[in-house]
Image 1 (cartoon, one colour):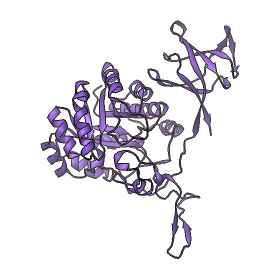
Image 2 (image 1 turned 30 degrees about the horizontal axis):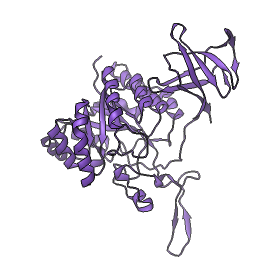
Image 3 (image 1 turned 90 degrees about the vertical axis):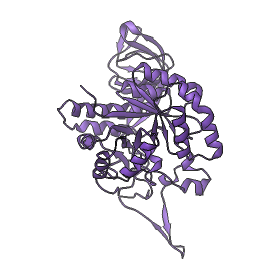
Image 4 (image 1 turned 180 degrees about the vertical axis):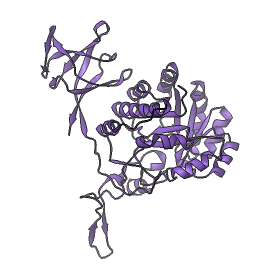
Length: 397
């Protein structure tokens, strides 16, 4: 089966990176310290980036590095210093929003993807970027599907769009709310997300009005998450080359779940037997989300969100002591109870995020239905896990 669209997943750390690779991502994008839009979460250092590139290339996956903040003189000088090192690691592309950074990356010979922060919205802009050596453009979130299709028909560049994950009140970026309130610039990756709070409108005479749109919602600046899994055929047929999952602040189980769902959906279309599966949405609801919307693809987003509408919560209950390859079993040290049919997540740097139901447990060679806090239990696992991997239990809210 020939791949006709690339599935691009986020990774904040090695567990998320492994989760993306093992659940069907064609490529992964990561942040590097000091140059990306997620400064408040885990990022890869120059030293660990080398291992991340190797891991991706060992699995025949591409890796793109985010260097897409607004760059002042000190920032561009730092970027200039680290470019040769990044190039030596053989990364597949840099995601950039600054024109000076484009010039430096071009001189270094690294492929360039234009970031969504640049708010590219027309094919004339893409034609200019092609002259500057850009290979791919992440189009503005404000575009409709019809507008994206028109752009795709009038450019030689690759087109990438977001298809799932958090949406910003500033849409494609350039938000100043966090900077004004906390002196933390969103455009330099330091956003503290004040838009996700509940807000009130206060008139000049001091009268307060709480703005409510739907059943006690007052997160008037917080849009719902983007979810386009139902519209995979329309997206592919519009000429988009790469589907991007938002979520570099999200843990490995989020990356595993969302990547797996979209991999299945894309494969369903590419096989010629497309059929939307309602279970895909139910799976997506299990991990962090603020409810779902279709963004600007078909209309202007109008719904605001609660903080988290995931149907399940995740509780750490133990860690892996040993893995026994010959019987596909793991010894787990528990600090909470576990029983047959519980849904668990085993997470680690190499393991990524293994999500499965508990089908078989043993203590001292005897089958058991329930294991208690403080016990070590043998657990049948579907894939290899590693010592010190953390075990979580998914609990219905």
